[in-house]
Image (tube, rainbow, N blue to C red):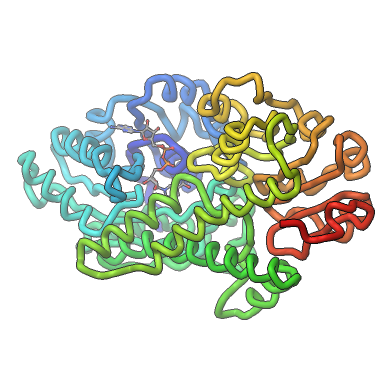
Length: 471
Ligand code: NAD
């Protein structure tokens, strides 16, 4: 039976904000807290600070209604039955997760507790974090019967975060008491019962056709490990296919065919078997490092993860070399760059391989005109202000008069570009595609010299430089 809860979410970033509007969709009252006053002011006006599909609509639906935004954590704690901690857990110098934000929030919650609260780890955290949070509560004088700590890892992907949240493959609740389990079951009941999917105006997604999401109840430690291990496994899949793509390239096979053949095995699956310039984003790099660190602390060698990281770094370097061998020299060469976000569908540039590559090309003296449908404002804040770097209003402006066009982010709209127009506006019709968005045969038909990842060099026959293998 549906029960309306009052839920506090601490941290209104990609995870916290999406969680907040989605819990409101499920019928709960939500108090969304952030220490960033500017962000809260923006959110109170119903303006999303991040680019995410469905977020503007859900904010419009729930802002200042079912969801309120505040910087006052004490007040939010006192009014909420459950508090979800969704602040950042970035990588520290040593490679482990920096837990200082979680520590600060847990301490502030502890000082405000006057009645029973369920404290839920939504951030991605190393195993034993639940025990640390419990210790903080007790140290601050909170009686043991006034709180529980649970783990409810989040598996949403940026770009499809709202749909992922409301149509999850699974919901994991790590609980060590019946009381905690009851609260979390009630939070997710509209999804696990399917009632949400029958609701008018429900965000459409796969669960409407594929059945209800399973709720997996585990220990808190198991839930913490599930999240780290899931991300490490996905990163491993990406590094694996990237190495296979390098083999394909060496022997003249097409990684897209190979990947389809591998992924069609139900035991393996197609997802995350896409060769490219390596993974990035705010999760995989830090979570792989943090999980490796956890293993080390337990005296367990997880060299596999070190290899995953090494392959990922090398993949970016290989792309850089590929561009060099297509252009011969870099200084003064004009590059059109499509994509700055770490992946399509988001404005997030954290650990984006595209940003790293732009920096590397600038250092070599290239002149870059870059375009990204959502991430340009964020990119401007981190890339060096330079005469050699400009931001274009669209993909065609970025390509105009360029010596080569580089595809660095898998935005679906790049695959829809008018190839005829593109071939006419580029100075030389050279496209180096780090995301395999285009069909090499079609690119050849349009007269492009096309280089993808893990594909036989798609050289245009009329281009003598590509008729021979140059070192
Ligand atoms: P984010 O940087 O977008 O958001 C974190 C927010 O927390 C910021 O708005 C920040 O101002 C706020 N904050 C920091 N300290 C605070 C405090 N003391 N009180 C209140 N607010 C505070 O981070 P994110 O991408 O949403 O990630 C949050 C967590 O979720 C991380 O652990 C991450 O690994 C995990 N996660 C992220 C994703 C993703 O795709 N981004 C997916 C699953 C899990």
